Length: 447
Image (cartoon, rainbow, N blue to C red; front, side, top):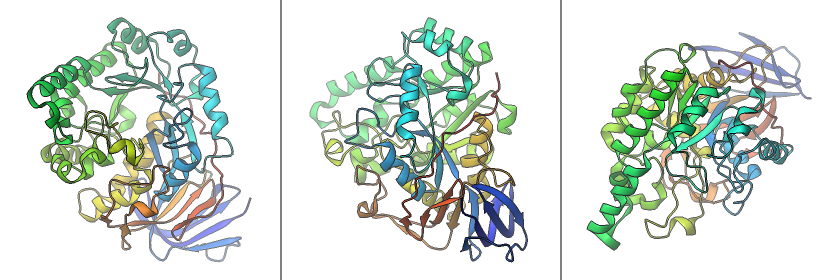
């Protein structure tokens, strides 16, 4: 493997910003220093004072393979991910067929080998009828068990209290949950149909998938976890009310953690008027006050992780009437530029961005030798430019669906270079063609 020397960087790592150089050999960080310019390397990257970050680890993506490759696949979406500063991803189980067995899990790893530009891991899904498979899971094979405690496709909605009790009691890996109360949502939708009929529009989405639906489900999940001592990670919080369920403090001291997703930080309910179904997602984007509460919770270490919930659909699918249009949007390519935009607006600091999108994901899920800029660790690195904006357009989209909810928007910050395992995969606005993604290794996890 070749060597790379990154010089004159502002290295953002473990709560500090320090000027220096980083030398990479054989895929790993060989040295970090104030002046390594005399070191021999096959390639030199001039940082010119830009931020050098550990690569983002996105713990929630939907890459749609197998079964929905017309929307996305592992190759296309992982390429979009590295363009957005994401060097590792955890992919969700609601594919076709869903990832409900160890064989299906290994099939996904086989599909990613040699095709994923970024490093990869896959969740096992929970259903009412795969409890024996969940019990037989080897912790090293997956970041966790995904439970849809709310609407999902196929048989992946788990709403039987006895089944949930057993999973929370016996899980040997983190349990990650999508929390929305399905009976509440169904009642709200029926009432909305009776009241509005064909006049139902995307702006009504948060009136159907309400704060109450989120609160009921999140509170139930947290109660289960506290009773059984479960390692629980609640995905994509959207409401100020839910925040009271979670403690402030470092992620390393918690057994119950939570995350926020970039679209819930960048949009609010007022954006439905212009974007409609393009920002229809579950849980729904809610009020401006909720958005501000999420940002405050990130700053005070009540929310532990930042992610995307990248969930692409075709433009034609999104153009359907509101009730027929699928939920979700493509986000990985815009992840770091959007986070840099929040830094520019002083809603987050760059140190907080690194903590929540790299360090804490590695800590929470036991990712081995990634997520930090440390000598001996894998050289998953991103050179971020806070001065050069990203002009987002559908024409530049690398996701197979070919669009972005940020189309036409300027994000104040850009990705200059991305290295995965020491290999440059994104340089100066283009993919290099290298496909170095590796299966993520997990250190022993907390039980």
